[in-house]
Amino acid sequence: MSGESATRISAGEAFTAEDIAAAVEAGTRASDDVAKYAMRLGDDSLILAQRLGWWISRAPELEEDVALGNIALDLIGHARSFLTYAAGAWDKTEDDLAYFRAEAEFRSAHIVEQPNGDFARTIARQLVVSYFQYELYSRLVDSTDETLAAVAAKAIKEVAYHRDHSAQWVLRLALGTEESRRRMVDGLTLVWPYVEELFVDDELIDQLEGVAVRPSALREPFDALIGEVLAEAELEVPDVPGSIGGGRQGRHSEHLGYVLAEMQVLAREHPGASW
Amino acid sequence: MTGGSTTGDDGTRPVDTEAEEDQYANEPWPLWEVFVRSSRGLSHVHAGSLHAPDAGMAVRNARDLYTRRNEGVSVWVVPANAITASDPDAKGAYFESAAGKDYRHATYYKKSEGVKHL
Image 1 (cartoon, one colour):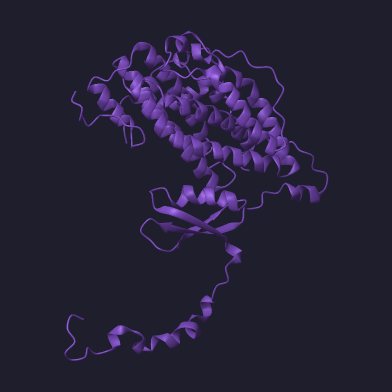
Image 2: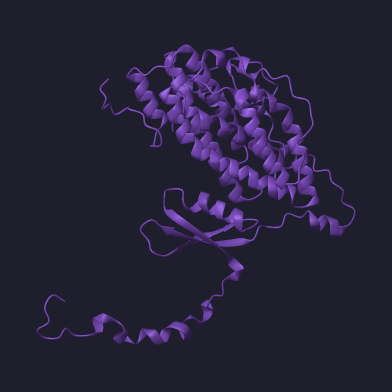
């Protein structure tokens, strides 16, 4: 591959899943471990996007349908990039990974498969994931893996907006009416047990020093930033025990199966369908 | 909020009196007019309108709805009820007098002899 290759990756420029597919074709392949890591990141975004898509036509107002739909589309963009890169290591495509893996093969964290609940619960989940992803991507841009760094550089600007969107809603719901505040408190309490799993290190992370971001290192900045939002909203950090986790090893809660059934049914009924 | 039981929320809440019920009624969000200045434009141009609970969310919604394709470098939102408009039914009285006054247009004037490059 020449230095002036069209598939050369540079941070900040428009950089799509198609670019990554072309780079994979040209020989930029992830190692097995890097692919496993990229798949985790992609799965988090993919499952959350599928969850958020449910809100379209059901949000409090049309404008919020669009806002949540935009966020879901951003997340699908990130998922496509990560999964395309991962798939390349195993001679597969992004669609193979998204549509033809079984539940136990997904590596998403439990928080993203949690039910939407009411609007406040969805916002609570979005607050946690957006702040987590922002801290993650802001460090992944320095990864020694150029592809992961480039995907993170593109994603971080979008995640910055997701963070702002959820924080603005937390403030409005918490400081709105008695009813909206009750719902915001309930939403946070329901989501909080799933926070801990996001920050757990494991063997794969140990093997990818310099490539992967160590999740445990993100906990302190996450707590500080979330703490600021919650303090402004006059909310307490929920005092609830963490859930058992296991998503990174393919052990999921009862919810993921239903999410996958809906997401995968069309591709499985009509393999290769396009429109 | 729409969605009923599919939101996983049974909607239980204390409703004792009609007044309290009103408190939870789903009032539509106020309307905002959106003005976008494009990178090539010098002034903000009316792009459309949207609903939002307050000005901060209106600017954010405007970004989602009206600057999706890199149209804008700046967005204004104005509460729709803050705009005082001319009466559409009185259009004639307001604007007709301008119609007969051709001399307000440059094309009314003949080019003077000897003027080149006009």
